[in-house]
Length: 276
Image (cartoon, helix red, strand yellow):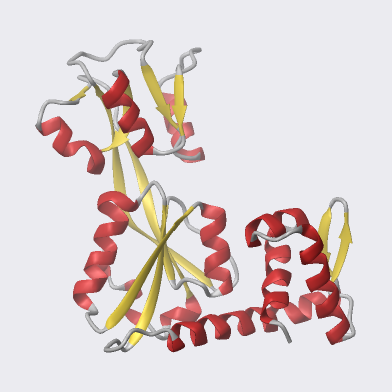
């Protein structure tokens, strides 16, 4: 049985759509269809009901799903074992949300490196959707994410709090609205906190989906923005940025999500001494 066909089946189930699965796997939709047809022919069962609206599991597909996940996880574990660098006892795969690496994900992974010197480490960057797929497929063992990921075989806990501070490129006190304000979209909970603290009918002239991008823009063009303190503490100390006097601060929880299957091999995942 072709492992690519099983991985394609899992990608379709997770995305609910053949087009999205093709994008994730970087193949054509016809390739996805061919792989699914081949898998169903081998099993002699219809696994998915496919339509223009998406794809849904049949009863046989639901039964096969768990076995497919185990096969995919076994394949990834075998791949890691075969590719294990000389002198290491195991391979630990970590993913970090692209906005959390600096002084958060990097610190957690460095703590792992110091505590587990016999392990080879690999790190990947992705968004929430990608990271969840990697965890469910067994590609990675644990991930640092801005919100807990749920699913069969996954567990999460809060490991840190991001302190979000309104800073400006000029020294000033809080005001009703800054025309040069740059908005950083950090998710639904942050949007709720922000709207409660700033109930103004204004639109920021620039919006970013990543803190580092917003910071780079701020330093180049000027203005103000809410940014994680871990990114800006040295810039504040050097006088390149100034906390806006009287402005409310926010906090945002950071979560570690891990595969329960990986916990047996790496029980230290839940060790709080690893926290950033």
